[in-house]
Image (cartoon, rainbow, N blue to C red):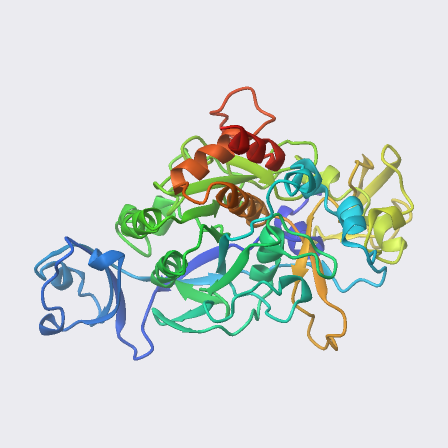
Length: 490
C-alpha cells in the first residue's frame, strides 16, 4: 500500500508549525482589514471611510479597516501607492513527543552530550567559550513564550507583547508551545536542562499566533516591535508559503503581499535587526514559481533544515535566493524508513528521554511498520494484525525521536507543572532559531555590526558545501565555532 506521508508526520512525530491562509481578515468590529503602501505621507483615510489600526515603517505601511471590496477606494487616497486586503492565517497543530517517563540527566552538560546533536554539529559549546549572547537581544515572533519555564528565565516580559487586531497588547505566555520550543533552541539558559545557543541573551516574545490565528498585518506589527525593542535578531519560524496559482482564489495579486513586507523588513534593517526566516516544510524548490513572503528580502536570512549527517531533510524547502544557510532541523534525508527507524525500539523501552536508554545500537537491523491509515505502529513481525506494511531499516546514529530537535516546551493539559516540559520537534521552524542564537553571539562580539555584516559572518562560518551558492544549504550548514572565530580574527 502507498504510505501517506502526512499521516505519518501527524501520527508519529512533529513538523514545525505551518501557517495557512484561510481567507480575508476582518477586524474585531467586523470591518474588513487592509494593508496599504504609501509614499510616507498619505492623505485623510477617515474622509474616505477608513480607519487606521496601525502605522508601520515610519508611515510607509498602514494597517487599516474599512468596508468590504474597497481596495480601489483605498488606492484613490492621496499618497497610497498600493493596497490589498489583509489575509487571515491559522496555524496547523504541531504533533510532539513530550511528557516522557525516562527522565533527563540532572547536569545540562550531560543533556548536551546525550540529546543535543544539533548543538554538537555546530560546535556550540566550543563557541560559547568566546561568546554567550551577553548584551544581545533575541526576539521570537511566534506563538508566545512560556515565562514560567526555568530554562527561559531570561525572558523580558515587560518588552514582550501579544499582537491582537493589529495592536500591541501585554504578553500572555504561550498557549501553543511552538514559540517556547523555538525560544529554547535560540537562547535557553541551561538553568534546568536545556542549553540554547545564546544562553545569556535577553529574550523577547512577540506573539502573533498564540491563539492559533493571526494575519499578515499582525506579523508585520510583530516584526516592527522586535526592531523597536532593540532585537539584534528576530526569529520568524512560521513556515508560510503561498503558490500564486493556488492563492488566486483568495487574492488576485499575491506578489503584492511580498511588497507589503518590504518596508517593514527595511525598517528593521535600519534599526539593526536581522530577521531570520524558516524556509518552510513543503520539500519544494522555492524557485519553481512559488512565492516566499519575507525570505529573500533585504535584511532577512532564509534557513533550510539539515539532518544529523548534514544532508537536506526530507521535508525542507530549498532554492537559490531564498535559502542563505542550512541549520539542524531534525529528521533525515528520507522520511521512510530512515527518520523513523528505531520507533518500535523506543516505544518498547518505555519512551526514555535520552538515546543511551534505547536498547538499540547504530547499524542494527529493524523495521518501520504502518497501519492501513499510514500511521506508524509497533509490530513484532509482519503478520501482526496492527501492521499493514513493514519496511526494513538500519538504525542510524540518532534513531527516532532523537534525530528531532530537543528543546523547551509548554506543559501538557492536566500536567501538574512540577517538572519543566520539553519536546522533540522537527521542521525548518527548528532550524531557524539555531541561526538566530548564532546572530546573538556575533552581536556580542561586534556590537556595532549591522544586520548585513552579521548575515555575512554567519554565511562565512558555514560549512559542508562545495560552493557558497548551494541550492539546498546556501552557504552551508552553520557552524557556531567557525563563525565566532572568524569574527574574533577580523
